[in-house]
Length: 413
Image 1 (cartoon, one colour):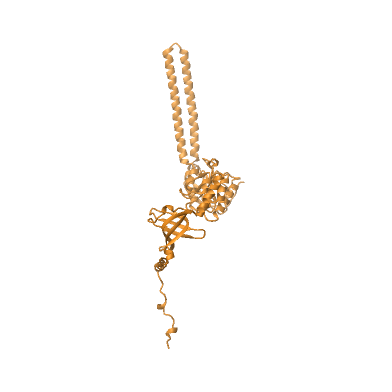
Image 2 (cartoon, helix red, strand yellow; image 1 turned 90 degrees about the vertical axis):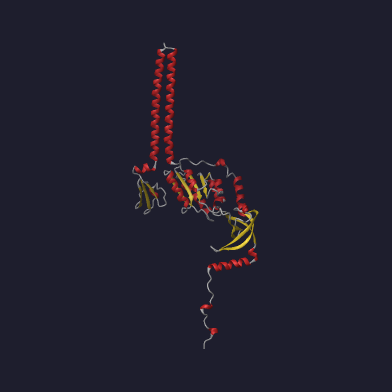
């Protein structure tokens, strides 16, 4: 006999699966029905604030243990109080942003509540370092105008390293770049930056380094915090090698910027600051030669005019002084000969300088049968001992590049 009470449950009796949108609406309804979440007042520190052209403000509110995403639409009150590090009181309601399923607080009003803990600590550190003289402009060293080797402390995987390499190859390929890898964000980043400086100074005990760029691309204030670290600042200050700080975008400022010998608004700008433009140098030299020759020619002509005038006056006032006129003619002839010799020497010297500068151009060097060797990371290879067996090497010739493999290494010393 069939027992309905003990029969298996039919598929039609099971709960039907809901769509993601339905579940999102269900959560949204629960949030709105809870009076504590429908109208909530919070106090916290602003982090990661941004305000696009739409006028809306996007940010996070955080304390020592938690963080909540927030949005305040353009019609909200108190946008002017929202900036990273500010301690604010916000009123709003909990909400689910359906496209991503993110929990966020829709803020309707904001009021200042003081300075956030992290920002307060940062300002106190700045005052401390400034009082100790780490910001003193008089101790900042100049960057060499024609550097031979520049070190870069940054991530080897990031775009910063590749951007700097491209700019140096274009502007001043005679300069060597040295990558000293480090982390650029996270809790371990300060330690790796300090270790990178130690490795660099050990290298500089036997090899010359003109300057070092410390940099990373843009990011949130939290991402840039390693460059506000006290020990990183003191390491930069103690560096025996001039330091260029290139952290974030133009509007980002860190303690590293203040302590370094030079602050660049972006890593790409740092690469341009340390690399003279070889094409511009060639043009300026040629222009200088032309201006010098025009100036010398003008002085010779003026001297000739003065000699002619003196001779004419002597002829008018003292026709009987033939001997004196002959002496004037002799002096003029000597002066012309001297100026001609002087001009010839200067022309030859300028031709040599111009030829040397042109010869330094990478294309001319390559056309003479030389090649530039680079490793797999794009670094110029200057010593055979640094090449590893079976590693890939890129050879740049005048008409293109060849990729080959190092089969054997035979250093001469």
